[in-house]
Length: 343
Image (cartoon, rainbow, N blue to C red; front, side, top):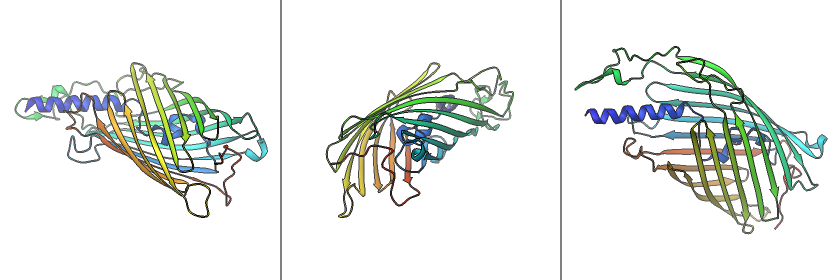
């Protein structure tokens, strides 16, 4: 019995340690404002609305699916292309909510980002983007955590006992700054490349409930990918991500294939089915499926755990959902922003 609770306590400690770091999504490419502020407004349209949801270790702790969850809606706008001619600007707004465990460890972040996109040719095949982001962060925790000093043999955890933990505060707020670069290249009608780099926590904000002098480390993020059009119907997307903060690091790579269906009046697919697979290094394998109707895309994956936490988490991974819609103020999108291949 004690071994079971010890594993449970270890799992709680591990999860809360991870949650104290930045949030991560398997579908890193579906939330561009979190990935890199330079991607703000980098799309062919006037506005983009998205939402991501991720649940981790469902049913593993208290028997519910909502133990450890993250939600993040966002919206960004592109503007200025008619005046600038050789580029445009973007502004975006993002909210992130993350809650973890019985202790109610909560992380909320309100962000605003800005980017400028410079083109290098008339057809907008090559685009260099630079962006900045500012965030207001609120972190809080309730008193439902239980620690090793509260364990009683043959009874379990007694939260009435003194945990002997020097917690100085149960909530605090801070301000965070980040910046990034991104480059897109349509090297041919069939091949498109992109690569980006961002640095978060430039101002090293406070990051502890115990000691106000402890600061979050710099976070470095790099992403790259390519899209290959096999024809009018089939598209292959391959991309990867690497993140590093102090001694923690994360790597994700994978691919998905899109198969399009046309109607008689459209030169582009009006319906697209997606299938793919992603791998988080030493952590999880994630099969993915999705559907796109016109400019609205929905993707769903499930993280199948491969790490040492498989036993403690009862083999539970976590579902992840994203939905993104791109729209325009006019009847048709302005295709001058991003080069549109013709087949």
